[in-house]
Image (cartoon, rainbow, N blue to C red; front, side, top):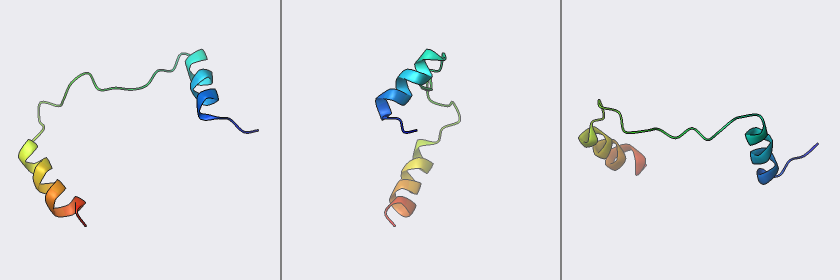
Length: 44
């Protein structure tokens, strides 16, 4: 049995599942550390 992306979405919605979206950013977020990681690690 194969499902399309739209079919999976409809199936999950029918069973009460919704996309998980964060309400807000974490208070502990360190934007400088994120930017440092992005420039050092992500570029590799």
